[in-house]
Image (cartoon, rainbow, N blue to C red; front, side, top):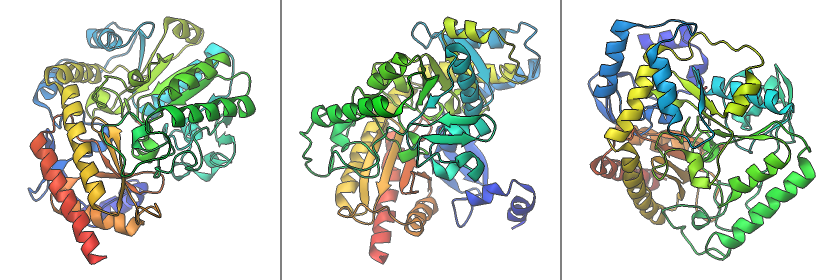
Length: 479
Ligand code: PMP
């Protein structure tokens, strides 16, 4: 009660709005995939602080590296050359294909995206920026304008953003927001809240619940989507643009957005159309490498690599520091040269402790085989969740990649109406009471989000599957 009182009175009242649990969890300690509350109760953490704890809570190797650096040096300024910063930038750059070799370190994903927007405008001399419908790119005044998810926009930033092409940023005026995700589930009858075709139209390890009329495989539906994309560009996008921001897996429909995957070649075509208009292409892996990067999708280290594209800039945060605040922009020497015409300074970006931690995270992902775990356990989870989807009327869709999974809940499969918030909360609370923490998201709050630390085991997956099965069953029995 005392904690709740402090939370109400002194602790950013906004937090109360997003307090998910009716009976709050008082977290005290964490180790790898586990969290403990103040009463010593253990939870399997499948949310990882919003896909941020990449290799495990208080991972011993990362903690040891941080402790050593904390005893040596906490902070200095960029006017000195200190090894952790330089070694980390070199190491991070080595994870990218040419020409992505120049690293700027920030303190968050929003800050990384702010910086990327500025760089894109300076480099191209253009102003307009394009994002996808349902996207989330941050909570700073600028990135709020870039975000196309009304729930995260204040009226002043919201402007006309979600219904027309323009979004008003309170600081920088108009930002073009072209919404070229299909609005309705027009193309394929097998679509739940995700705007794309059924699971078989995406690069997914699980099949949809029923046959779909769109010719069973990439092709037809994808061509139609790409045709629609070209048409939107031809009719609605200005001839000169500064940038296009895209999340390699969209958070809005299972992340913040909901783990939506694009049809084959969609991003590739979008990149082509953007570049024809003089714009640069920015992969926001802050949701995905903010949430999609650092091996989380399993098959690739970066989300963009699954789309056969090379962005001009990649922004990232979340998993980069395993929970230690940090973000980054990685770009080309050419764009860096345009940016160098001005002066940019960031007090904390490149902090030595953050750099040592982030460096250890990269090593740990490799040494612990975290990317392989993402692929193996992620595929297993999706396959088993698809069985539960076939078992229960209220599980509409299972989507995602690796350990970035969205489970969309519906009133019933025929109506596809999102499961109401009270029902979502009931299941969510029940899962927690049985010892598993998951997330909630999606534009209608209808998607459970599963993004555990990448040290989860098959046994943990089985434990969660049994718990989820039981809580959906409990809800169905009461209904
Ligand atoms: N971009 C994406 C895709 C994100 O998911 C997020 C965070 N959810 C951000 C940007 C913003 O990152 P941060 O909260 O670190 O500012």
